[in-house]
Image (cartoon, rainbow, N blue to C red):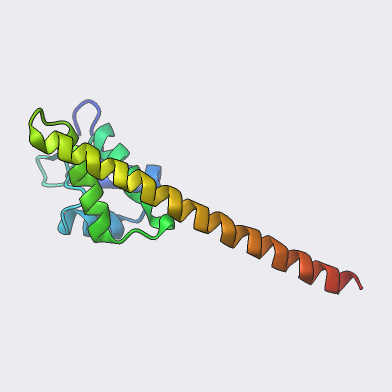
Length: 127
């Protein structure tokens, strides 16, 4: 059984709402490596892994590519270093924040347009 704070991929999938296949794919492409392996070779994940996966999941609706997700994760990782990479990571995070805010604003505009369209349809039905 996993050690304290460790979970199998099935529990991680259940908690995140992502499929086992998606989590395994993220491992294969380097977005989310398991923090450990059981004696039987099963992937084991920590709460930090869960947080990382939830960050990835939250990027999906904003239309980020897998490559961009990797860039963000590398920027986050580099902010934890005490060298020049940390400063570079901070700059990259600020750029991601600006970009995410722009993407959110576009989605809000699309939602407004969708609400307007639904209102027009309702008005037609009620005639």
